[in-house]
Image (cartoon, rainbow, N blue to C red):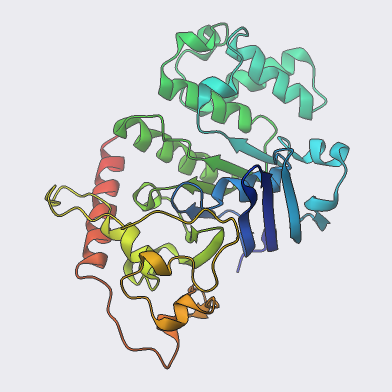
Length: 351
């Protein structure tokens, strides 16, 4: 089994707000293996981005780490100085943000933005930095890199700007690449191209990738493992095929059922009822219980542990307790996931 390049252990993060203390991330643990893609999936507000910003040391001023460890190169990133974090951030762990226009300086030519990032993390000359920037532009699929090097962000399309942001993230050859909803602002065709680009770059560089998304379908053909988050916790984690074809948590059932396919009738598209909790003074038990039509009495009283399904697959639901009634997932969940994944493969092959 590949070695771990990152280990998150019992991480808890809260935010002080006018309404009270929001427990955004609650005692989560996972690891990231060398060369793999781990997808963090869940609705907005479930704690995905907060988790990854904790890794980067980019939490807001009103955030507080209540406990846990984030281990990278035998260092706990939560207990390092700003100087140490600056040497790691962007150099060894890089992040691709959701909106490329907020990540790029509109007053600076894109070539200079990439070259400056190279020089920030590597002791190279200006000429070498420029050469590296040209190589990165070519790597991410920007045609005529010599010409485009001297252009400004507004002269590029949305998909091209996202490619430039990826080039900046790759400037220092990071070991870990965190992609925070990098396809949200793009159309379907551009989404597929960016996903294929990230996969291709990973093969060429050997980097490990954490892919944050609210849409299971986006990572259907990208992730090696999937961690499903809800209300600040990981409620299911396993190999991508295990989570797609043998989901065990009712929330994962809902996410899979709500994925549209070409065979989906608009009148039958599923939506998870209700809304996520606010996470100010969370209620006891499983946070998903109020939205869960299969909730047991235990779900409303005691938070379930992560039950093992296989050696690599775990789910936090009392339905997996040996005393629980046997309940099957909604009909065609696996078929829907398989159809969607096959369609993603066909579209990627056509590009």
